Length: 476
Figure (cartoon, rainbow, N blue to C red):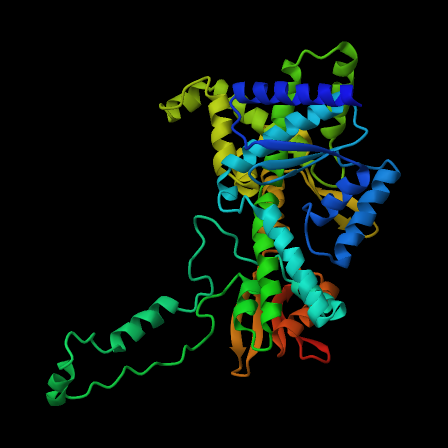
């Protein structure tokens, strides 16, 4: 065992040194060997330390069953933090761990340098441990069942946040806070300079304060941060419940960039593990095992895209095209020179997310090479319905908008002047799942305390679903 650990430590040093020479800039990485149960617990919870909830146990059961039946397995788990924490699966061969280690350094470089991760907390492992301790405290104080019921409701809307980033607004509700602040300041009396300043006011005509007209609608602009809006404006929530919403929102803000960049992140890590492993002086048997493992990682899937495969191919295509410019490309962009492929992929890694990555760099040739298509269920069969490359690209991009979640906004928090919550689904061609929608409205009612409504489109018609605490209704 000591000999195996020594060989693993040596491999980590060699791979880290090689990765730096290739231009990767990553956080320090702490590796730890873990048994399968621990790895799959971390995979289900998303972090080594997090609060307990039945949905995490459900996810763990599914992951562990797939591992037990050899249907799939998690080879590694890496945490976006400074330093990064990476967990390796016990029982992996040395060459498996070498591949995983090289892959981890690619992820760490992406975490450190992609602009969408620049707004995330690098100390979230510690923060989630604090959240877990507070959740246990609330369970002890208010009862585990009470906390779990509230968590069920809160987690039903946890994905509906306004992600942090350079374009995010400080006034997230759109409630005109700056305007109100200006009005308050204009009505404030002048600061007194001496104790006798009030005597000069005796000869002045009193100035009536400006009438503060009630906003016509709250929020003034649609608010995407549904969970944050409810946290701040629900009249029925207690302090501990607002705190739980704040914790869930903070954790979701941490996970959001990972959802935004799944294809890019995995493609980038795969790009580098392939090149690092090729540079290592592997014995013949390890080289053969690496080829087999890498082929398994890059195996295309029938019913969904493999992010490792698609991301890798796009990065390789970008590098090839920027290394070998056509005469037309050189003419159209005189500042662009041949041989800048590696520089270009580092630029793409820093600035893009999955939506812009596919929109800008998924070409006709790649769609044909990767054999990408759109499919849907027709009768009792799944059939290919589109092979045109632009429609395929646009179809893939549309499924990645808002990380694949429905785009829901708070339209009115005082609907019909009754304090009811009116939400709107920004429909873009994909209908909502109606049973799921109706169940979610019941959870939102628990958070808001008054009837809730959701406007969407069903079969081409505007439809409003409502829940009043007793039953679901719908009207067109």
